[in-house]
Image (spheres, rainbow, N blue to C red):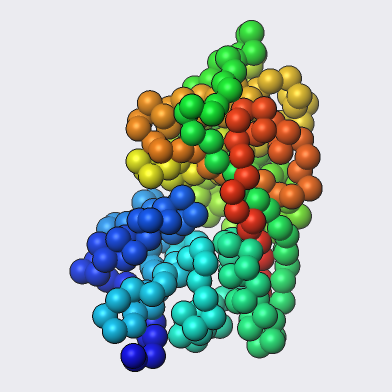
Length: 281
């Protein structure tokens, strides 16, 4: 048997990589979505998909996305991770968010090579199917709707506040125009709750596939918390997902965010995988 070798995935081999992930699409939903976009034009303000495939005897053994996010395949073993290290060790500052055990393996190597963590936290992935959900209507006097161009400045504020609450650096400080373009590029995936003419909640359906929807960037304005807006906004996102035929909806929650964990339990979400997130330089 030959040694595993890593090379960048091409459009020609994309379907074979997707077949490799198909049985574990729930655990690898974002990686599945990034892999499916290999060879396709990138959305405005986003980097084109770039995925490493580890091959052994003409079979896909593992996958790691380099752009637009650093994502490691769930359950990746040491032998499969090893040929990826020359690519990963040469990355500039990056954020990895994946299966905690696999991130542990990677970080041991990166830390030993001199990389340092700016953020290092544990999270847990949660999911819900249509049959297990407990949905909520909007609070009287509010409405849930798709985000519009006029919401951009409010959503920039929310994105910055969310990063600060997570203890992450604020990219707006170094590149305000680029950060604003990044938020603008996500507008079609955003759903907001509006009350008395102002936005009080936002959430982004960043992956929308039959295999599942992934919700990220959930934020409720502090003065509007504990009033049912997040529950209503998440209910709308889940309803849209299941109307579109999604198998499930998933998201990730920081382990010490008790309020968010309680909310998602009330909506019917259940934990299914431990994650580790490291922002490193």
